[in-house]
Length: 255
Image (cartoon, rainbow, N blue to C red; front, side):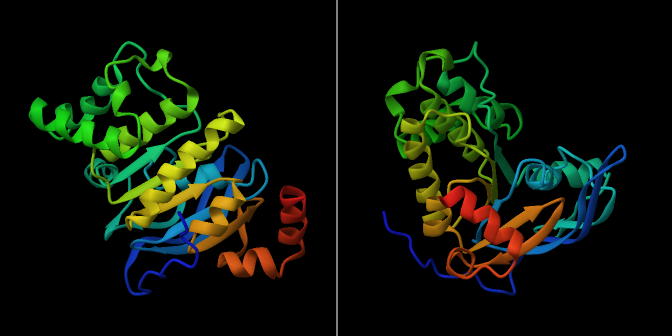
């Protein structure tokens, strides 16, 4: 699949708006004034060294972590301590983690239908139909009756993606979704993510998979020490990065 040079989203359609976002863990200043806007339908790739704040940032977007200063607005709703706002935002945001976090005692199908039945109050028949469609989409419909322990890591991560999509989110967050996988399993997960990007889903992806970033991203953010050091299109970031720190990091991971 060739998704080079995807059409950029419209600049007036901010889906995620972050203004001067700060986060501390005790004395550690993890996010130091993050300001960025993600447009509806945009694929944003975030990369940088370990401990640079990448995962903390996207975890703040669905309140898995609480930011202490600044503003985060998701699809017109400001993320505050108001539990109604948090629930409204979480209903629109799906997340896929490094670890698959599947329930080992439930089948693949049961893992996917659990939230739609209990949170969305869908009838079991509808939840099952949607789940089977999603398993078809991620290429593992034949695994529906198996348990997570019977699947490969790549298959489990595809179940995790299907589970997140079952809630019909407007935004998908990916926190290094391939970092726990064996090399031969990475491509099957990235292929699913590429198809999702091609469908127009708004996506934020923390990853060091630079081939994926080059082909699919509209924009990249390079994080270091809790700040956005540089941002730009794949063409800019890979061919003409301006900041020395960006140049050093890319030289290391692309060598």
